[in-house]
Amino acid sequence: MGSCLTLEAAIAERQKLVVAGQRLVFTNGHFDLLHVGHLDYLEKARALGDALYVGVNGDASTRRLKGPGRPLVPAAERARLLAALEPVTAVIVFEADTADELLRALKPDVYAKGGDYAHKPLPERPTVEAYGGVVALIDYLPGHSTSALIARIKAL
View (cartoon, rainbow, N blue to C red):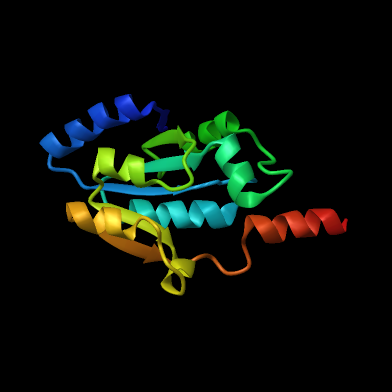
């Protein structure tokens, strides 16, 4: 089971991975209404390295980026659920609109994001490339998204 960490604690744990010669994979997102598509994505991300850190957009960040009524689940609860998943090593809640600060601090070997970024700009790409990291795009499990799930619930 993973841990919910502050950025400072995550940096300290990251140093242990570096000393041990282990590869860190990092991803981030809202993870509002956790579903099997999220689990599939996290399993694929974890397979790219020895440890997986997940940045979770905080409540204010999610409201700014997803709109009124979001998040449905508070950040502390989303972080706790993610940390309980087998592929996840650590979870860090952050309030910025991008993960640039976390990436600069942690310098993960691999930055994993969803395959939808193959067709749109990835804001964090320059940050990752600047320190020599690799961006890996992971295909989503078809038919599984939080937006689609919310739409199905509203239709009931």
